[in-house]
Length: 258
Image 1 (cartoon, rainbow, N blue to C red):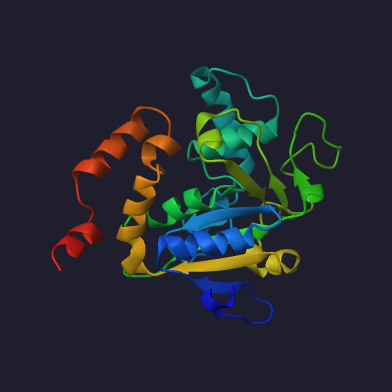
Image 2: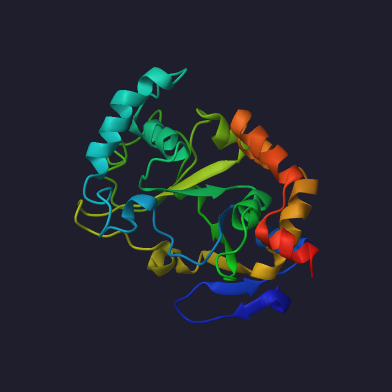
């Protein structure tokens, strides 16, 4: 799809640019030809590393990852209507409730990824990004019920995997949620960004979304049924959807007054 191709460099993922919803749909449909693809939306261009590996100078998550995870497991059980069966499922629950983990959120639905890119105004007019990752199904974890001994412990894996979680939490199903789970040698080793990992460079494609297109794309997604209440089932999602319908964000207000 060369008409949207912005840049092609060696040892870097191809970069595309779109500004309209019809362009996005055309591009991701072309990308999804074989069906083995997932997407990730980011409001700005940041490295593809999990939250637990960011801002390591100011936060303890990086060095205390396992201890903090154990604390979450110990205290969260009283709030759950089910009991996760293993640490993989616990990680999925923790991630979707905002705890920094070694999981990175992806989705099988490109419109969901686009929503996460444009749902808020751009950061200082910086473009947003939708990543796509073409994966090998044989290298994906689709069930945690019967894993090999080398995969039983998600904190001891030796490679980065795609993880399709069981639908144990409502948001996962609503968002067609998928994760990459990244490895590191020990709690002092930094995570390698996916876009710098030789194994993934050729499998990643990058779509740039201009900041000026955020408000229009946000409205179009809303009309297509991609809203906070569809992605976050429950009262908080309902409230966010009603708020969106009854107030203008800063980029929408600016557009209204041009």
